[in-house]
Length: 282
Ligand code: AMP
Image (tube, rainbow, N blue to C red; front, side):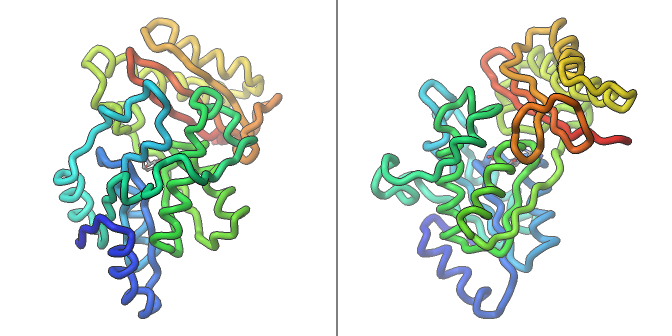
């Protein structure tokens, strides 16, 4: 695995692959790598000859008072994990390399899609995400880019950006990887105390309970959301939102159907976690 820190080094490292007509896949991450991220490397490898993983804690997508300063950063550990899993090129730029003119210039925005779910509580967050992903798309110019469904709204926004701005990049949304007890893997899980870790499980349990109710015939979104709330009720998790939405428009639905997504964000102590599940008939 080659590790580079500049945009020009990415271009240089990928030039021979491009010249040889090899397919290039990009996996954007903020590091703090776990099995969820590593599964994206596998998905990328299945679809391409060359796997590029970016590792950048993007200041643009953190709001004031959020966890930018304490976000896990360990390049050595992440590089070892990424390399072992089969990454060919690791791109770990500094903020100055990514934003040489500072972070106040030009943004990519999607005001409608970003007004829902997480976007309603994290103003500017998705402008930061779309802007950095657009830059990474230009820097690596991949054929395919792989994201995790764990960040469901992000997947919808990026797919839309790739289409609307004619990036010509295939966007893959890979399944959520969970701990054996059901908690969705997240770089932020390291913030949790043992007691909080136990309580955090209520998020995935609540979603599972709603899925069971849907399979048993419940089609009322409020009743499905109530199943999640019931699970959170006993513990210390504070729901920020729990919503059943159309998977394409992110608008709340009036009647639950297969393909709709039940998404939530919750606070466990000072840690904000997200999770979601797609409703299926069986
Ligand atoms: P992050 O480093 O949190 O920005 O995430 C980088 C990529 O990994 C995003 O596309 C996430 O959706 C994805 N990801 C994070 N956690 C998981 C997970 N538990 N399962 C699958 N993908 C994930």
